[in-house]
Length: 469
Ligand code: 4AD
Ligand code: MG
Image (cartoon, rainbow, N blue to C red; front, side):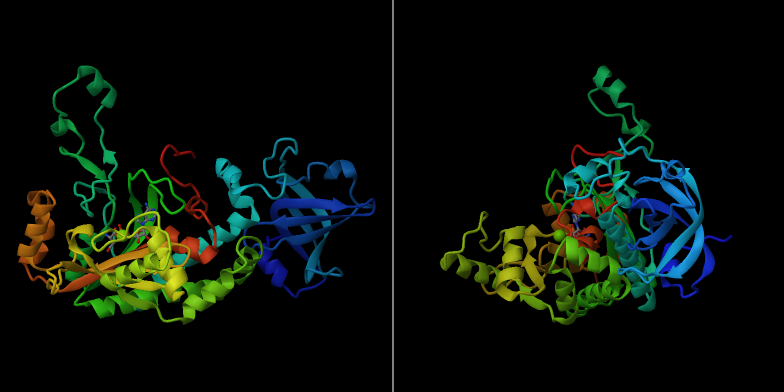
């Protein structure tokens, strides 16, 4: 008999007909006459109830059917008598694919802490919470590809191994085939990069943006969606060493259009979750974050605030005057920390904020420069999106298209222009105004699931001192 996926079995109206399902046992309970097995195959957060008539099966045969074991069940689909489900299966035959020793299976108990579950990341996808998170993660990826495809963007694949530093911030993992042990023992005065795989130093990319810009200068509108790597030693609930980023890059786009895109795109993703992930969101709303669905609905329907950095600093300074205490300073020129961002978003405006026009010195070399203001202060056309609970979810900007200005900025930042010749060529041959942004996929996942720690919205997190699995 063909196997029915549990999500389809639960929706089926073909009562009193034979059916076959397979899955992992979430629980088995009952009395001397009848047992109930809750079976889950990952297709949905909901389990199907298998009813076992104990006059037909011995306790001995059922012994391996414990929490975590994997079984195949044949039976009759019937309308359920009990509350909580529409249908159930009256078992006529079963087979154990794989047992799970009750004394050893780590997911035996309910209510295990997130910290503990991280140590068993190879098994945690079988819990309700992680099943929900991972199904939503898939749905968000589909939302992203659909959005860009429907809006005429091309999916552009940028390299993961590169010889340049896209952000000019130097937080990179080096990629090498040199034998480091031997080098250490030989104590050479210089690393022999000519003998390395690429013949020069190479690293894992921190962002696909620079290559993305090359794509936009030919295809008009592109986006990337892939892993990026940062060797920043940030042990926070919002940083990963390996995270996924979505980076659209668009020719002929100005700052207003860029902000429209950022807002429209995020709202589309949030609405997609509300439409496609109802069961999983309801579970998370009940057990992880009681305000989740309300917050998603609110963001999907409110207009984001658009706030120049300079005005943001005024608001923060006023808050300090009125007695609000921040851990870090926030004078004009300072990089805002997440406490400042969250104050603006959660307490002052109570909605998402797109912050614009940051000081030149705290942003990357490629951002489009504004005319200096009356006080001579220099700003760039950055457009970061700040979100409740998360802080920065998007980092974006209009790009500086002037070859000369870029060269000056690179020089000021001690970047070697020779290494970026290919990038600078876009400003020599048919330079065009353009703009783009990067959305941190796991930051979006944090927002959409209500999970508290970024380690819990990716199957196998990479963080300082942790590369298990
Ligand atoms: O602000 P960032 O560093 O911007 C860039 O990389 C640009 N090249 C993007 C672009 O304009 N194409 O990073 C973009 C986003 C951040 O807003 C944040 O959501 C996420 O990437 N992000 C991280 N997410 C998880 N862990 C980290 N360590 C992250 N660093 C940045
Ligand atoms: Mg940023």
